[in-house]
Length: 116
Image (cartoon, rainbow, N blue to C red):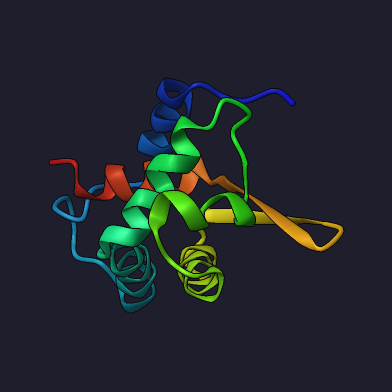
């Protein structure tokens, strides 16, 4: 699977998305950004993203989060659902397990939104 470098993704996002400091946001833009930032405002979810970012294959099975996070499988699934609903991760069901990967373009959009 071909992946874009983070520099390429950030450059693409910066060309289409302005900073929240550049102009007033409309309600839809503000709600979309708030959903992303709210999902990031939890230490467990930040750790999930860091585990995904460090994964050599770029994806991690839901079962592989339980031990490093020290959380039960239902709790891990809850956090992954929040990240997924915010568009920050994507799940791919394979049999009884779901493999998650980061949506780097969505993260880059959040980063670009707060760049001054």
